[in-house]
Image (cartoon, rainbow, N blue to C red; front, side):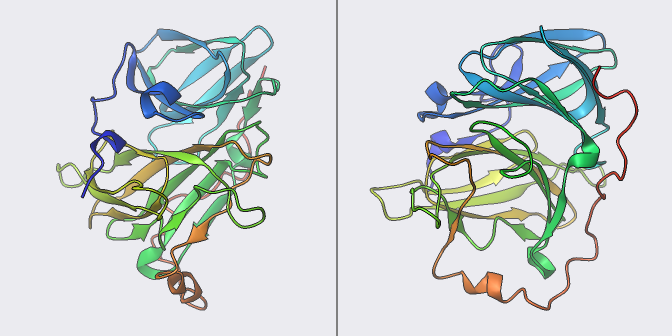
Length: 301
């Protein structure tokens, strides 16, 4: 039922200073990377970007990101369940220094790329917050680096928050073929954080099924806080949050297509679910938090 190397339980993908370290070599693909870095108060870390563009995304806490060309202060957030965050974009072939007076946890989302774009600050006030689905399929999507929202060469990244008991990444969908105007070929990483409740750690489930090209990816995984799932191909969804435990996941995507775009195809047996949303209410627990209306002072320097 499972493809073991696609589910990386918390701690199993640690390397050096990173609690998660996934690169194309480790994943067995060509484009996507994810690292999760924890810094103690006053801690620092140097990132060599190499052949990839990167986004520094605070998961908890804030930091300062400096390069030869930029000095960016990230205000961050208390946790992924407390609010939208600002972020920093770093170009390929550069060196960046992260420092955090108060300490924190930071996701580094990367994708191999050709163009070298400038380092930039992404304000929290510029992140579109989308409510997707209805009823028990309702979820919140923070489109901080979605195609068409924030410029990058290859990297696409969004955050999804699913209230406890709900299903997201549903109906099952795929993006493992280049079909102009219909589907884009994208590798994808899911990184999970699950909210505890009443002193108990939460859990969720992730399903992936083959799309019919060769053997394909087959996975039914119980996911917990800090787990990572790799999706090289196949129909993925649902992502299910256990009742009482809100689920967060960071999606990191990239692929070889000529256009940077997220085009998906719903599973033909379940596509009717999306049509059934019309006229139905969104889960009243959403949004878990709104998008900030104004950016804080002192953003980029």
